[in-house]
Image (tube, rainbow, N blue to C red; front, top):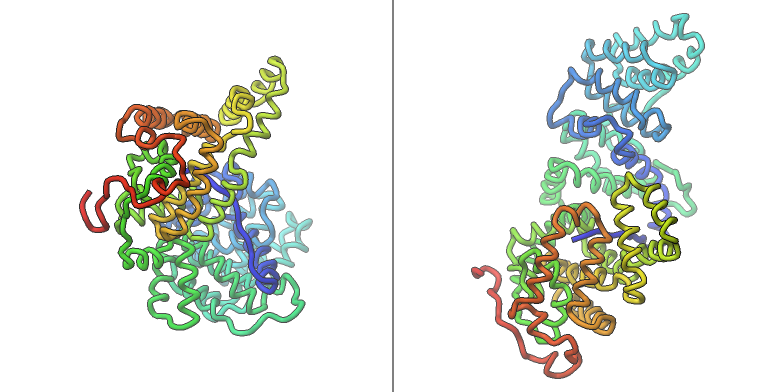
Length: 514
């Protein structure tokens, strides 16, 4: 499995609502994504999984690491990100006077921007000792140049001044603080308040302001986005959502289902398995089409003569879903269709063509200079060298064999996971197979194109297990039972014999042993 790109919206009203949500969501995503190289090692995991293994004695040290990190000093964080992280340190530290004193040291030893951030943390700690210390700080002469800012922060009302889990969400921005409440404390009520926000009453007004955070629909959509994001990271949050789903009824149940489906597709899995899908024998034309995906399927030791490359069971379906999520970012049928569309519209062919055009017109000296400029990036060098070697040789074929073989694999995996029914899967596979037959000259020609595409795709993956792919290719060439030796390349895929009842050896049905 490899990678993908895509996403869309629905009607106009939903689009307007999501404009507001997107502003919130992107800002929150910066905190969890950021640029990994700018985060001190282990700090993100320390924050986002603190509730699993609290280490209060490390909070002062971790705060110091954050204040001296690239993510803080390079201006990558917005005010809302600042608030979220300040909220974490405040809630994780609680009202422990020793931790608060440690935070105060960070203030005293810090630079201007660092002090302002620590002030937010101290303000959010909110105990009497902290308030007293903040007042003292504002009066110290060495902070005279920052007195106005210090007094502003001390007097400024913050969303976290309220009991964030004590009452329903009335402002979409508070959902981010509930997220941090959960990672700092592991408190179920933080997730329950987010779930409750899905039911915020009220309708969207015409021509509402895009940043109307108190708008009911903005709250509802933000709650959904935050829950999906949170549940993908935290099993505990997903477990709470599933418990609430079992208790819910009517429209609320449908909303819970959307979130759970988006995270792990488990509801569809249950329905799919209850339908008792059967592995049917394939026609010759269908078997030929499956042969187009044979290199990767053979590498994975899968079946070549049924639509699903392995027996359908609860374990295999759940494993397939994990792999689709990991390699393709596919967790729903829509995301699967987006990936298929991306492959059909260009996939890696576009990048290969662009790179090929660049390096093909270079002299040897210019090409060597390009490699030298990128000597520290092995993946880029690999792409340049692969394109230099094969771009002209492949001509109009490009990397179509690579992209479309994976397209067929995705359809097969999508069927196995229950995203596509049998008719949908074959409806997508057969036209692509016919296109490949017109484009390439033989099974070996198609297979070699796949190998070139995989080499272009990832230097790291090629180095790690490229030999397994090469071995799979050679087995397909040599084995009598290989689809490449069972079906002639120039088979008429439209002939009655190719598409009729003729079939290969039957595989076991669901529940039977291989």
